[in-house]
Amino acid sequence: MAAWWSSPSPSPSLRHLLLLRPRFSISLNPTCVPGPLLRRHSHTRRLLFSSASSSTLTHGEDAPPAQSDGVVDVNPPRGTRDFPPEDMRLRTWLFDQFREVSRLMAFEEVDFPVLESEALFIRKAGEEITQQLYNFEDKGGRRVVLRPEITPSLARLVIKQGKSVSLPLKWFTIGQCWRYERMTRGRRREHYQWNMDIFGVPKVRAEAELLQAIVLFFERIGITSTDVGIRVSSRKVLQAVLNMYSVPEHLFAAVCVIVDKLGKLSRDEIERELISTGLSSEAVQGIIEVLSLKSLSKLEEVLGPQDGAVADLKKLFSFAEQYGYADWICFDASVVRGLAYYTGIVFEGFDREGQLRAICGGGRYDRLLSTFGSEDIPACGFGFGDAVIVELLKEKGLLPDMSRQIDDIVFPLDEALEGPASNIASSLRKKGRAVDLVEDKRLKWVFKHAERINASRLILVGSSEWERGMVRVKILSTREEFEVKAGELE
Image (cartoon, rainbow, N blue to C red; front, top):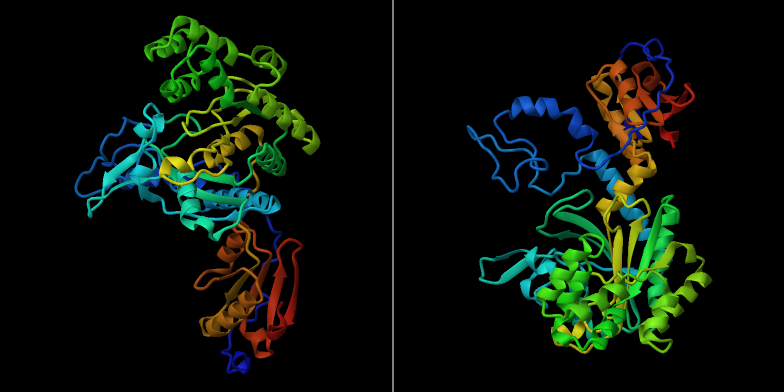
């Protein structure tokens, strides 16, 4: 600390330089990429890169980037995103909400490589996901893929861990996924996904816990049950209907993919696709009629009270009452989810105004591990993407204030005081304060900078004060200013 007081060089007094001005707060409204920073610099970029192609997010499907005279298109690949600071702050906030809900539900975090073996994701024919893979052969001749979803990676890790872990497992992850698909609002070719999964709980209690996690997340970010609902059904419903019409087992996956489009395609289109799989007209009509049901009591009339799907669903709705989220969920027999591995209850979140695609979705997959040659373990889980929920928060005006927050700015008024200023900044950082050390600027610029980054204090190191071992502190929110010993700054 003694070095702070050594031989200060003379310079003008600080007091006549200090500007007594109010602090102006700045509120940044974060938006999806491209963010405000990207927009602010878009004109400059067009001038600098006028020969480069226009934004790949809005122009020709998969056109190669235009280049001229060695200038590279500065837009990210089509369907992907940059995260400038304000958008990164929003992403960090969102991920923090995911993690906090997972912690409250007593889940542990895991992670996996983005690059996986292709064989992990090549499953039953007919799944859209198998046509959407970013897959290629690596330099060692191995077929690999950028993961399109997380559940198979999770299953692989469970198998790898084997008997070294005790059941039940309650794991979550937040990972990046890639799908080569047509883009719409809230759907990109890369996205981040929050997954929560439970292994080793065969009863509906597991699904009830997962649904509470989803509702708890919505409530934490200001979304209500009037904004969002969760449709619930069971794969066993469709299986029961197919059994009624003696539809062969091998057609089950293909039928799931088709009926998952209910509400997205017309009834005539759905019927044509089902008939093309080899189903009879009678079976097609029966499937559509049952999957159009929106009442659990009506389903019970069709399948009977002893049916497994009916029993599971009634138990789940009973749990929903006990947890206190019954107003969030509704029965909808058309929910089957497009992935082949689901075996029981399935669910998906939706915005009640119908402006967005599914917000989240999941269900039970008790027989996934055996497809990888291992012994099956009862399991269920969900995936929750980052893109759609941000769109919903924008719609509802619920995006948080993501303006930058800094505790202190330290500014030496003379070049000879840069060493002491560095020492002060270092000391404050070790005490846990966020400090921006600014040099070679005019005082007027420093005040404007403080406003931009919402700094709480400005600490000015001037010669006359420093000769007495003091610095001047300005509280920017109140305009209060005072001197304090440099070694007593907190």
